Image 1 (tube, one colour):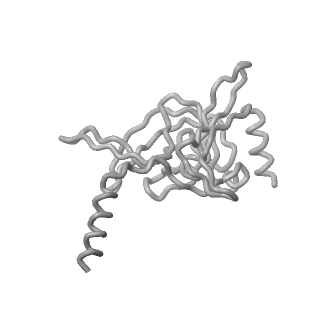
Image 2 (tube, rainbow, N blue to C red):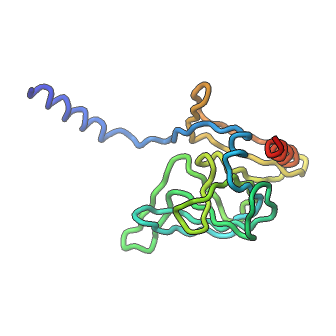
Image 3 (cartoon, rainbow, N blue to C red):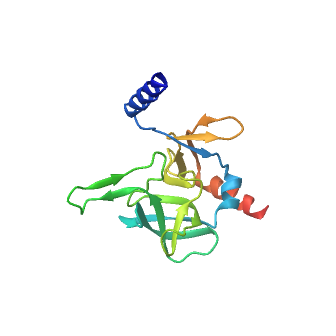
Length: 183
C-alpha cells in the first residue's frame, strides 16, 4: 500500500515538471467539409481586436470589415470570437493562450469560415478551430494568394498527422469554394 502511494506521488511530481503541450488535436476538415459546416464564409480585413472576459473565460474579439460574402448573410462587419487573450488592465496582467487557436492581426486581409457563436452576442467563431482562417497575401507574380499555417495543430483524419502550410491562388480557391457550395 505504501509502495503504491509512493509511486502515485512520484508520478504526480514527475508530471508537474512536464512542459505544457504545444499542439492542439482537431478533426481534420477539408475545404468541402469546412464549406458545408460553416454558417458564413467571408473575405475581409481585420480592423481591431480586444480581449474580454465572458464569464470566467478570456476571449479575443476581432472586428472584421466584410468585403465579400461567399456563403451566408453578413453585415458590413462581423465579430470573430477566439479563445484566449490578454487582460493588461489588472494589477497583475493575465494572458491566456490556446495552442493552435486562430490568430488574427489588425490589418490582415482574410478569408474566414465562421459559425455562429453562442459566446458573445452577434459573434462568430472560426470553423475547425483555426482551420477556417486563410490570410490573403500578394504572390510572387503579384496576384493574390491564400495561405494557411496549421503547424501547431495535430490533425486527426484517415491518418493522424501534424498540420502544415498551404497556399493557393485566391481566384482558384474561391472557385473551389463556389463549386463546393453548388454541390
